[in-house]
Length: 198
Image 1 (cartoon, rainbow, N blue to C red):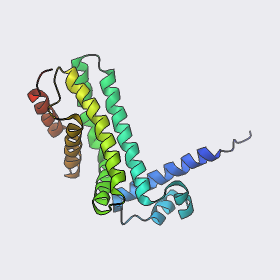
Image 2 (image 1 turned 90 degrees about the vertical axis):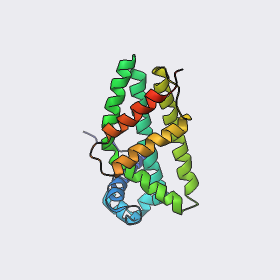
Image 3 (image 1 turned 120 degrees about the vertical axis):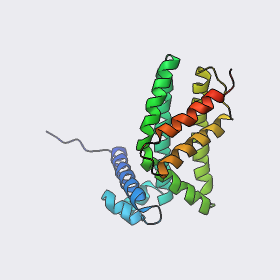
Image 4 (image 1 turned 135 degrees about the vertical axis):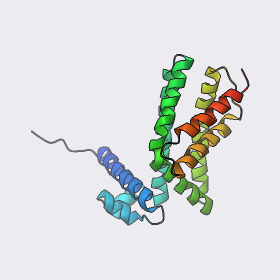
């Protein structure tokens, strides 16, 4: 049997995936500054040249990784909202979604590393803030839909509400709550109950 040779794009995809995996492991265990490009490349099984063929810098890789995490979260929540045909189904779906957030620790650590980098590096800051704004707007649209489906108006401007939700989740996870779902649900319920009717 003749083994099919991988094309350039397929090889690049595999290389990027391995670099993402290595970076995630090292960023979570060591932090941005302690995990060097050499460490990431070596852990992934590549040279520094392979790293720089795929990413312009360590910050660029981290930004791409965060973009992937945030995109996946938007897709998961969107699927929950779109699959809910009744208020009860939506409430159940949201409860399951919130229960799953405890598994996002690596994503939260990556985001915090990016926030710290953006706070200290004025050249990098606009790139992170653009990603954060894009995510907040997408999340805000979904949150507004959830409130509207419950017959409520959003109590804050939707992207601001999204930032509040993100900060709550990240803060609770970083404070080593094994399962932050209870607190998140309490805050969510209070916001929903106090929101004005449509």
